[in-house]
Length: 116
Length: 113
Image (cartoon, rainbow over all chains, first blue to last red; front, side, top):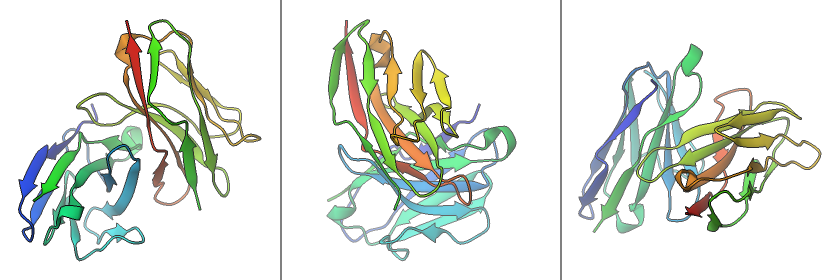
């Protein structure tokens, strides 16, 4: 149990376009979802925390107008990178946390974004 | 602020060797400590955790002890296998609030047969 999926697993987009990444909890309800960014050979950096039905809380230095997060249901959160630039190229990872036995962060496999 | 420092990798060992991956932390208060493992092509998985000083987390032959006096949470395994090849992340979170995770930089481990 406690599976989190991400879609797509990799995406290439042109500079100036927007791209949406989905994160789904497949077998539990995720009251909280987290979005991380991972640079090559570096750690995961938390970008934002979202609770279902509420606005996301962004970490310091993360542009909320550029990285739009929507947590519309208990099983789905989306991250939209708007007006993407090459420096947005990275590995984006989500995690989801539920209640009771699911009260820890379960991670998705990540999405590789390349902006050309 | 809170931070986690891991020993730099990559680490390459032979099968059945003893493994230690060092992890130290800086935090206000008393955080919970975690080790996560990321196998190739997969998401991070919780390997073990400890929530208070002197606690020992263990799983799949791996162990780590929460050492408050040295602010450390070193990962150990007595005899590694090829299947242990992965990237290992040390992390901490505060007990209260959103319980956000702060990660170390990760250590890539390769076990040769």
